[in-house]
Length: 496
Image (tube, rainbow, N blue to C red; front, top):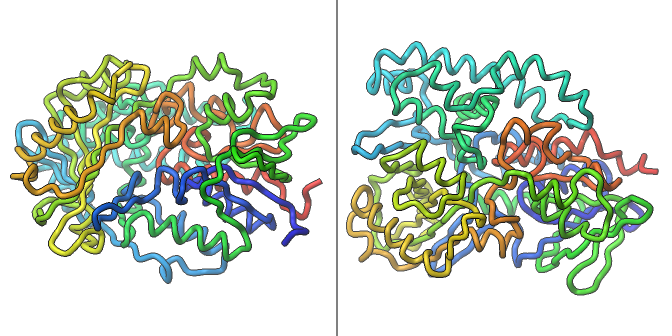
C-alpha cells in the first residue's frame, strides 16, 4: 500500500466518496479527510432522541450511478443497499388546497394531468419528449465530460441554441402547458439544485426526464446507508476515511498540489489532491497563499451563489400515516417568492415547503409508534443579512403552524424531538461561502466551461468534485463530477 501513488480527497460528501472509490479503482492509495465527526458532508446523518435524521439529500433519481461504484469494487450494490422505488414521487399541495400527484406510472401520470387540465395533456407529452432530448445530450453525453477548454463549449453551442438554452426552465415549460399548476409541477426542479426556475437555463429541464426514466427511490435505512456503503467500499480498497481532520490549506510546490495541511499542524503529502469542499472556499481559503489567475478573489466575489435553506428536523410521538413520503406544500406566491429569495430581499412572511416523511416507507428511522420528519424552506443566503439567531425560532413556529393547519393536525403537542439548521449553519458547519446550500447558481453563464473546472485551472494536480464544479448540484450531478475524474486524472501507474 505505501508504494502506491497517494491521493488526498478533501471532504466526504457524495462527490468526495465517489471520487475516492474511482481513484482507488485507478490504482491510488486514497485518504479521505473530513472535518466533521462523521462522513457524508451534507449527506450526513444525525440521531437524536431515538430518531434518525438524514441531514440533506432524500431523493435518489439515478441509482445506476451508485451501482457503477459498487461494480468498480467487484461488488453488488443490491447485496448491500436496499432501494425502495416510489409509486408516488411526491404530492404538490397548492395554496387553495388542491393537489397534483407526480406518479411513476406513465398512464396514471397522464390521467393526473388530464384531471387538472385536460387541454394540457398533449403539451405535457411534448414537453417530456423535449426533456428526453435535452437529457440525452446534457446528461448522457456531456454530464461526465470535462469542459477543459473554450473549444469544448463551442462544440456544444449548436445543441444549446437548438434546445433554447437562453430561455429559463419556467419559460420553456410555459411553451408546452398553460395551467399554472402544471407550470409549477414541471418547472420547480431547479430549486432542488440551487437554481431559480425563472433564471436557470432550460437545459435543466432534463431533470423531468431523469426522474421519469429512472424513477424516485429511497435507500432503506436512509441516505446514511449509502454513505456507510461507500465508506465500506473505500476501506475495502485499502483506502482510509479520517473524520475530525480539518484541512486548512493545500500545499503547492512549483505550481503543483503536493499535499494538504491540517488544523492539527499535520502535513500530508500526496501526488494529487481532490477537493470536495465548497469550490469558493477551496480557492479563497485553502489556496489563499497561492497566486491564482482564473479563480481570483475578485472573480469569486462576483459569482452568483445559490439560495440557502432553513431546515427543521422533528420527531413526533404519533404517526401521520396519511402523509406521503414527499410532499411539497406551496404558499400563495411562486415567481414573487422565488425572486425575493434569490435577490436576497430578506425573510418573506410567506413560504413554500418540502416535507420529508421517511418513516412512512421505513419505520426503523423512528421509535415504535413515532414518525421522523424534516421540512425545508428555501431562504436567501447570508447576503440578505438576516439575523438567524433571533429569526430562527419565530420562523420555525410559523412553519409549525402551517404544517399543523394543512398536513399534520395537532403537531405542536406531538413533537418530542426538534432541531433547526439555518444558512448560518451551512456556513459554519459545511464552510459554504455565503451559507449557500448549493454553491454557485446553475445559470448558463455559470455552467459547463464557465463553471469551475474539474481539473483546476490554477493549480496542477488539483481536481474538484461536488456541487460547485461541473456539472452541478444534486446527487446525480455530484456523482457525475466524480465520474469526470476517470477522463482527466492519470492512472496511478502512469503518473509521472
